Length: 212
Image (cartoon, rainbow, N blue to C red):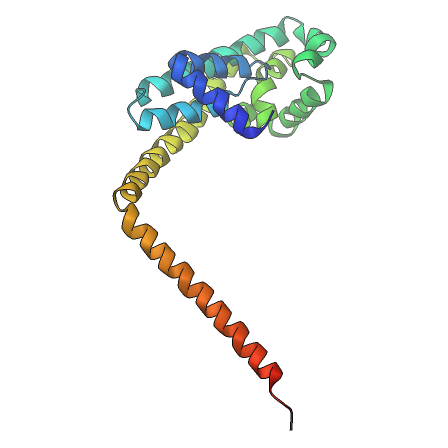
């Protein structure tokens, strides 16, 4: 599927289901399913910048979806779901290599990897499962997971919201002054083309001059 097709589906989901699409997309992604949670969050925040959604409710639901989804992943791993994931997970993109990659993050950085795992695609999907498999204390996982979800949602949601406002404001100004902008661009192109042709004419004229 092309990237443009993915964005079309995401925008359609936001238009039809709004908050529910963002909440479920993030929740499902956070225990291993291949849903575009991050893309849904960004698209929802851009929509909120135009008044289609409430940004504070959107951010809260995005955070809640992340916390709940990772906790589902935690209990899957804690209850022995690791082997089940290896056996059947390939059907939904969960592979042994991906799980080992996240286990490597834990071995290198410890439990605090959960806070920053959301900013890494593979780690975001499987950090709950791996934390449960490694039998991290649940209360510690919940605390670190909540912090990480807040940072991730605040960063991507807030950034997309701010940029969305500026983009549409710029777009409105462009549409308002479209005619003068087109004229200026046209004149600039004509000058550039004229200068290029003049330089070529001078270069050819020098080549045609007889050498003494």
